[in-house]
Image (cartoon, rainbow, N blue to C red; front, side, top):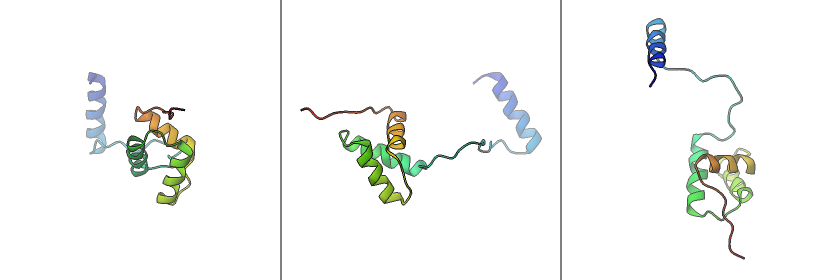
Length: 87
């Protein structure tokens, strides 16, 4: 870890009394960490299920609308990539 980062953290600790950083502004993710883990777990079980089917599954389980693009992004973040069944 760079010295400057350590120095910044220590000075922040001395100034504010704690070293936890708060969330930065920005658009919050529609799928939380629990949904992310669920998507990755299901993707590891069966790599051949499409993102649209998986999105419908997650939407039904979580009660929030989750698009297939979100599912695809989470799967790619986990290092998993698409597979096709042999024709």
